[in-house]
Each structure stands twice: as C-alpha cells, then as structure tokens.
Amino acid sequence: MARFQYKMQNILDIKYKLETQAKTAFSAAAARLMQEEEMLKGLRNRRETYEEEAKALVRERLDVPRIKMNQMAIEVMKEKIRNQAVAVHVAQRNLEAARVKLNEVMTERKTHEKLKEKEFEEFKREIESEESKAIDELVSYSYQGKKTK
Image 1 (cartoon, rainbow, N blue to C red):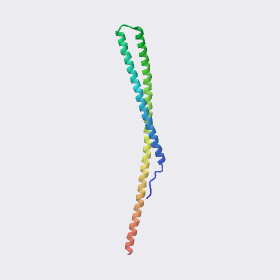
Image 2 (cartoon, rainbow, N blue to C red; image 1 turned 90 degrees about the vertical axis):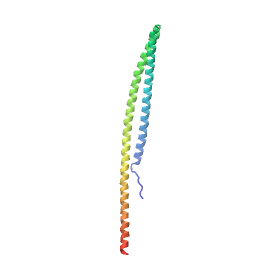
Image 3 (tube, rainbow, N blue to C red; image 1 turned 90 degrees about the horizontal axis):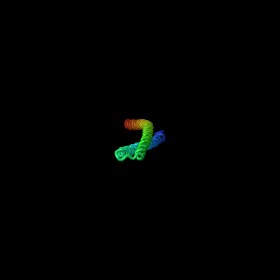
Image 4 (tube, helix red, strand yellow; image 1 turned 180 degrees about the vertical axis):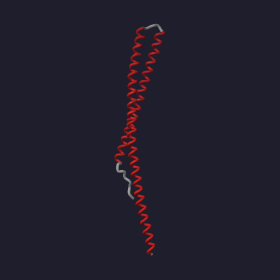
C-alpha cells in the first residue's frame, strides 16, 4: 500500500519552529512587561513613602534641610515614575507586536496544516478508488470464472 508523504512537510516543519520562536518571544515580552510594571509599582510605593515622610516632617519640629531633601527625593521619584511609565508603554507595544507576529505565524501554520489535511484526504480518495477498482476487477474475474465452468 502507498504511504502518504506531504510534499511541503519541510515548510510545515519550519512553520512549527517559527511558531515556537514567536511563542518564546511573546512570553519574553510578557515577562518584560510584568517586570516593568513591578518596577513602576515599586517606584510609586517609594514616592508614597516619601510623601508620608514629608507629612510627618511638617507635623514635627521644622527641619528645613530635611524637608528640602525630602521634596527633592519626591521630585526625583516623580521623574523616575514618568520614565518608568514610558518604559511600561514601550513594553506594552512590544508585547502587542509579539502577539501580532504570533498570530500571523499561527495562521500560516494552520494554513499549511489544512493544505496537508486536504492533500491527505485526496490521497485517501485515490487509494480508496484504486482499491474499489481492484475489488471490482476481482469480483468480475471471479464472476466470469464461475460462468465459464
């Protein structure tokens, strides 16, 4: 019996590898986004700590140098938070780009799988047709053999 061999199997194998790479890139982008968001959260927590410290400094005996230092620290934290928000936005864009790439690669792989499936179905129909012809020939040969006896 004939064995099915997909003519473009090497392309399908490449599509599987590309999909694996795209999944890896997507998960790396997602991990990077989570890391950037955690950094942003940590910076916001530090700013809140500085702001609480500023409130405490104002309630206590006034220590102008400490208050100024605290205000500078708050301003630095605000700048870091702005920069980190930009980094989070960039990470989100990278994640979306990785998601789009993954979807494209998956679509291409699925297309090739469907082509393989169609080619296999056609192969099966051909084999079944050949088997049917062989059975018909065998039956007609057997029938003719019985007629001549």
